[in-house]
Amino acid sequence: MSEDDNKIVTMKVRVTPEFREKIIASAKENNRSMNAEIVHRLEESFFIQKQSDDKFLLFGNDAEQIKSDLKKLQVAMEQLLNTEKREK
Image (cartoon, rainbow, N blue to C red):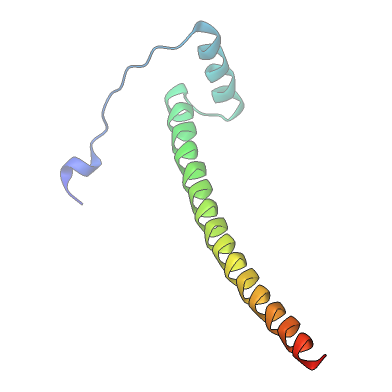
C-alpha cells in the first residue's frame, strides 16, 4: 500500500438544514461523529449497490438457465407428440 492510499481527503458538500439535522440525529443515535456517519452511509450505499448488481447478475444467469430448460422441454414435448402421431 502506498503512502497515497492512506491519505484522507476533504470534501465539502452542501445539504439542506433539514438534511443536516437528520445526519446529526443519526450520528448521535449511532454514537458517531457527523463525518463518521456520512462516511458509513456512503460506504454502505456502495456495498448495497454491489449486492444489488451481484443479485441482478445471478437473476440474469437464472433466467438464461430457465430459458434453456424451457427450450429443452419444448423439444421433448414436440418429440413426444410426433411419436404419438406416428403410432396412431
